[in-house]
Length: 288
Ligand SMILES: NC(=O)c1ccc[n+]([C@@H]2O[C@H](COP(=O)([O-])OP(=O)(O)OC[C@H]3O[C@@H](n4cnc5c(N)ncnc54)[C@H](OP(=O)(O)O)[C@@H]3O)[C@@H](O)[C@H]2O)c1
Ligand SMILES: *[C@@H]1O[C@H](CO)[C@@H](O)[C@H](O)[C@H]1NC(C)=O
Image 1 (cartoon, rainbow, N blue to C red):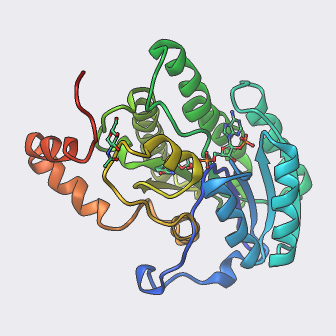
Image 2: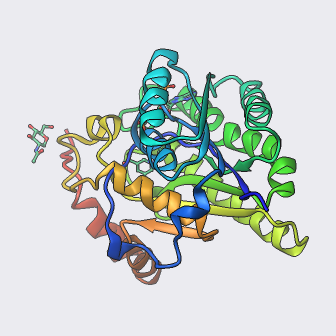
Image 3: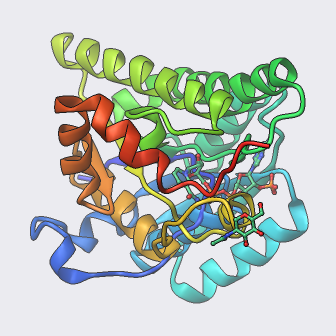
């Protein structure tokens, strides 16, 4: 039997690897020869996901907008051990691109395609100039494109016991200040993909959906948006990426990185108003 295909669409950065952090049931062998589509693969968490998949011997399709950067990531993946690798430049703010990307991946990786879809386009909205325009843009890039990618990949995933990996954020569970549009898209991802997971299970369709709830990760874009604004330390992107890859490989429904975010969410649900008060103290903001 061939390993199950996976489509990974991710945008992001992560680094690091902590053995005690992982469940023991992760078997890197299971990723050898797996077919993975990584979105947001030119930088940040997505780039690190690509490197982990390469080390585990996966066959990979990378996508993001910047072709020259994708080429560099591709070369590094080859030196790390990727079995096969391709890239396709695409801008997820255009509604037709997600399907094109999935078709490219299905074709290049031969149908029997392990798809893990991790999508990680754009961080942002700390300083919103036009809330409305921002929302429209975010909804396309951070939500609708994920839906389109998943829709296009689902038939192939179904044939291969595939995995959809969706990169979300703490702010998709627990709203945080100065992230209005961004938070809205992460809540939308949570609703859409958790509902989809129910359906797939009830219909006995063997595609797993892994939602990844991340805290602050030290990617360049995240650090730039949060510098001087929050009193929080960021976790390493390679480590976050590994948590994501392992979660997908284990067919987990949800993973939290760092892990204590899970307890934080439970606590916040129990005492939301004190939780929100404490949360606001982590922000460096004084009203004019
Ligand atoms: N970093 C954090 O603190 C953090 C926390 C929680 C969740 N997350 C989530 O993790 C994911 C990755 O975040 P990150 O910090 O790694 O971001 P990042 O470093 O800014 O990387 C973003 C990636 O997305 C690609 N991208 C951006 N806009 C795109 C578009 N319109 N079309 C196609 N690709 C696009 C970028 O490549 P090009 O510029 O080449 O297109 C890049 O590869 C996001 O979903 C984010 O919400 C991050
Ligand atoms: C808080 O913000 C002010 C200006 O907005 C800045 O000068 C200061 O350095 C920030 N403090 C921290 C601890 O980042």
